Amino acid sequence: MSSRATDGAFEVLYPELRIYPEQFYNYFRMTTECFDDLLQRASPRIERQDTTFRHSISPSEHLMVTIRYLATGESFSSLHFHFRMGISTISMIVRDMCKALWEDLHDEFIPQSNRQNWLEFEEKCREVCQFPHCIGAVDGKHTRIIKPQGTGSEFFNYKKYFSIILMAIADAQYRFQLTHFQLPFNQGPKDG
Image (cartoon, rainbow, N blue to C red; front, side):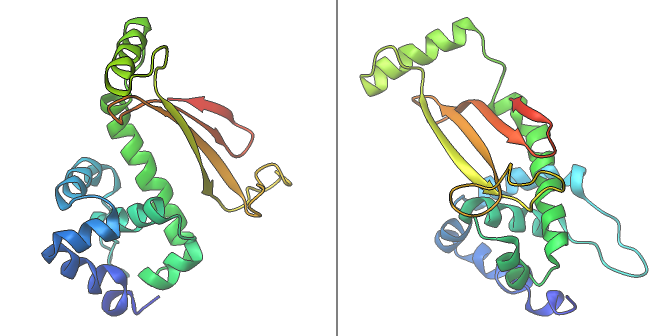
């Protein structure tokens, strides 16, 4: 949409939110420092060049769209009006940013586990939560997707929309230790 540069959430809201850390946290569900850290890490992977025909979408705007999507579960249609971008553009931004964040962060924040790690997790759960023989808490989230071609009702859920499911185990210190998600296009499950 042509009004993105004047009326989009990034141009209107982002500068104001940066001034008020409490509102920034309410909107993004993270601090400005955390946002800036993610931006610094992901920028090299998603930065695009301006052309004579159009200005590229900045890495800050990419991250704002993606964090808003992940933090609220808003649909791409809703974000389309909020950010004044096409739905397919938002879809591509979210996909590319999530991939960039995963590639940059998973080794640091979700390292490969071994027997010793699991024993340490169990000890911490016993210590912190007074819960013996436990390695963490398991939870899942339906992440809304556009129906992949040729999948029929494979990704249609009980909430009446298409989604993939992300499952994770968090340890006693609220850190993810294991994730599992099912990818569309019949690629099967992936562990990280």
